[in-house]
Image 1 (cartoon, rainbow, N blue to C red):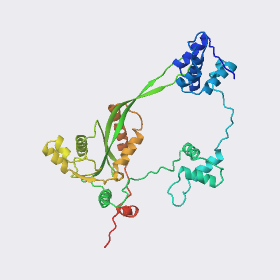
Image 2 (image 1 turned 120 degrees about the vertical axis):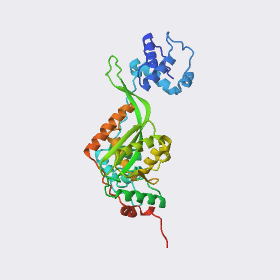
Image 3 (image 1 turned 30 degrees about the vertical axis):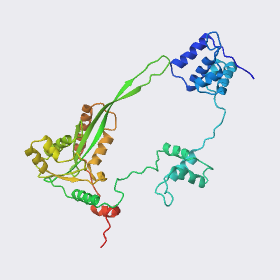
Image 4 (image 1 turned 120 degrees about the horizontal axis):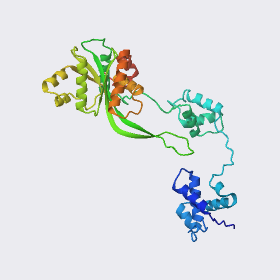
Amino acid sequence: MIRYTIKLSAAEVAELQTIIKKGSHSAHSFRVAHILLSCDKGEFSDNKGITNESICKVLKIGARTIDRVKKRFIEEGFEEVLERRPSGQLYQKKVDGDLEAKIVALCCSEPPAGFSKWSLRMLSNKVAELQYVDYISHVSVSNVLKKNELKPWKVKGWVIPPEQSANFVANMERVLDVYKQPYNEEYPVVCMDESPKQLIEEVASIPMKPGQDARVDYEYIRHGTVNIFIANEPLTGRRIVDVTDFRTKADWAKFIKKISDEYPTAKKIKLVMDNFKTHDGSAFYEIFPPEQAKELWDRFEFILTPKHGSWLNMAEIELHVLNGQCLNRHIPTKEKVIAEVEAWQNHRNNANLKINWQFTNEDARIKLKKLYPSIQN
């Protein structure tokens, strides 16, 4: 049995200690440095009594790994042992361009009877069944779909109740009745929604080191959140946006007051909004004098969307546009959010962009028939 004795020079010891203590090195180099320093029997080492068994326990590796490192150090040299030996195995590419195209086409086709969409395992089995290839794993299929940005297992849709709900359809039909009313300046239809926005600061640092290219690293610092209130009048293309620190009842009441001030000549404002616990008329009396609170309460007719029916609120459409066009980036401060939102609001209002709502009660009674209670005479 051949035994390899490691005797490192002072320069080699110093280089291995540098690998362990600092710098960016591969896991292979890091592990080899520990093994060589632990096995060193040279004049600059104190490891005279250390055995391979004790090294295995300390480094959590096998004895054969230690022997391979020692052998390669002796036979190939110091520089070679620090580099991982390239694999001599040749790998055949599993998915070529032709197979990839067939998988994509299959994914975009109709799923088998009894299924609403393709799953990854169904696709992999179908590929083998069609003899495109003898075998392909669902992981390889997933990689093909990700490369082509296909996600057949994800379904986007409205959130609606899973079963019959008289309460849902009653509130839904009331909202839809309001939406089909013609424009009336004295009774404007306004929709309101709200959403949080995180305040995130990007701090760029550019570390410069001799022999290395400069690169920009970012540190992300979170500075809390703000709340975005939005109201829009779909028939006129008018919208109102407000940025607050919180989304309490008091913040909601102040925003409702802001909406009221925007319609000084309106006799009653029909306000469509989600049924949140903060959307309560008692909030007016908590922050305004009784006379003003009663006047504000009387100026509005509140139309609440049903539970699981936030998609009925057209303000959600505007909020989605706001998030997609303006707030889909890191913004560090509330002041910056206010400035950006105000610019977006002015642009949208000046463009007079309206919402053409098409879904009616007649459509709902056909497409959402399962939600209507069955009536037996």
